[in-house]
Every structure is written in structure tokens, then in C-alpha cells.
Length: 208
Image 1 (cartoon, rainbow, N blue to C red):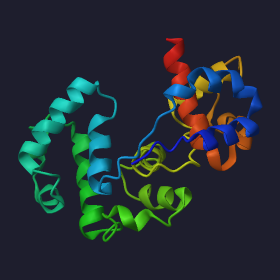
Image 2 (image 1 turned 90 degrees about the vertical axis):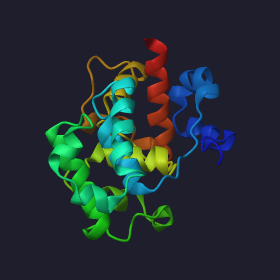
Image 3 (image 1 turned 120 degrees about the vertical axis):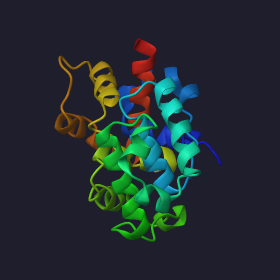
């Protein structure tokens, strides 16, 4: 597995967004993203577990979850009772979301799609539409899947707080941009939008 941000990709992005050259030069060595290529259900369930929690807390819950359900066995998750999942430390809403996702892949709207090869020829838009039809999978989660699990280069995570803060810094905006403003500001990033998304995170990291 290789870093998706090759020198050619970064150079191409810089030609599209020359106004970001200073930031790209500064953080070029930190532009490293190697896709996970995990099975989709496992990736999405772990993402739900980790949402709005510290890494330490989420990791502890994830370990308890795996102790009960093994390597995310979908059938076991679907057939589990609420108390079983609550004992892992999950909130009721997260229990519902995890079960919804497991069921979707097991025998629901995502049945037959728990194989990374299925996504090879799907566009980011197609994946987002498919995933967000399942309660518990929002646009942000779908975008993170496309970026970190598949390594797609055309993802603009316009609703991500870190991206909004990074764009505010890079484009010297007076206030935090809305997702709509993010899309307008980054329109020229085109099918290399993941580079800008990732650069926004690096800029934010460097400013704190």
C-alpha cells in the first residue's frame, strides 16, 4: 500500500490552487495517507464507536465490543440485545446505529457490499448516496470511508469542522465557513479535493 499523495498529485493540486502553495510547501512532508482497505462494515462500525469520544475511551469500548462480538461478526451483532451492547460502553443511540449498519450489510440495503472490491468502480457520490440511506451513516462518515479506507482523491469533506477551520486559516476568512462556502471556495480543487481536505487538517494541526 502506497501513499496516495504522490509528488505528481501534489504538484497537480498546486497548479490548481496556487494560492495554497505556501501551505503545501510547508506541510508537504506530512501529506501522507495510506488507505486501510478494511471490510466496509468493520470500518463503519468502528467509526461510529469512535465518534465524539477521545481515542482512549473509544479504544477501550472497541476492545470490549470485540471481546463480545469477535471480529465484528454481523450476524451476532444483528441478533444481540441492547443490554449486551450497552455493557461495552456504547450509548443507546450508538447501539441503534451499530445494529442498523450491521443489519444493512447482513441482509439489508447493503447486503453483498461487505467486500472492498465492490467499491473499486464506484464513485464517491455513489458510495455516499448508498451509505447515507442507512440510519447511522451520515455524509461525514461516508466521506471518511472514501478518504481513509479507499484512498479516493476527490473527496471534499465540506461538513468536517477541521476542514472548515483549516480553510478559514488558509483563505483568511473572517468567520468559520458553512459547508456551502467550503464548496464554493474549494470548487477549483476538482477531483483532487482530498488533497485540500487533508491539507486543511495539517494546517489546523500546525496552528494549535
